[in-house]
Length: 283
Image: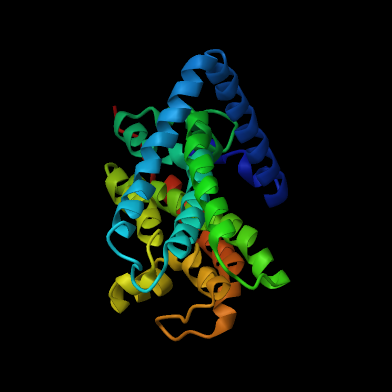
């Protein structure tokens, strides 16, 4: 049994979760104090992050300068998809974006130092080098989402209004689960950060466009295999009054919280299995 796990059985699941969140908060606070010690540098890097991600939406604007619709969707509708996807991913990237460094720690053996501390390894890895500059991505996504909400002509019922924040929170949780599952895979692959990025950064780019521009097999894959479609496609179709290209019933739009819980549970299992399989570098 790993030394980091010796203390876990003495705690209940609730206590372990509480201690993990507390440790995560303390490490994040430390990195935030370090970042804000150089406020001008933080402002410039956050603006750079904002500008770099904004080019994705500029590309969409350039497309609409030549066409009136993309896959049958207008610019405000595509902006709605873009804003929800970018904001949800931005939140997950802000909180867990450091998970892709795990492969490097596994290769060079520095993960051993985290195992010796009486703090959950997941909390340490997730909070490592917490990058507050990633708020720029979240802000950029929110600005596009606000534009979309103002420009869209939607019959805003109470259900549709509640679906929007639900999409953002559930979507962030689904992306967070993908970050953790991808990191767990690196315990075996050791150099799989690009595989992880294909589902995180690649996934958010995919969801920024209407499902009608992709082949149905791809839409089925991100619905039933890696359920990224529940980040925004499924609830967004209900909000926008669009038909599901797969012909799924309307209640599917309300499943993102359930999918998020299942994804987080599976990611937790994958993480525990990966951590137990870790045998250091042998050096």
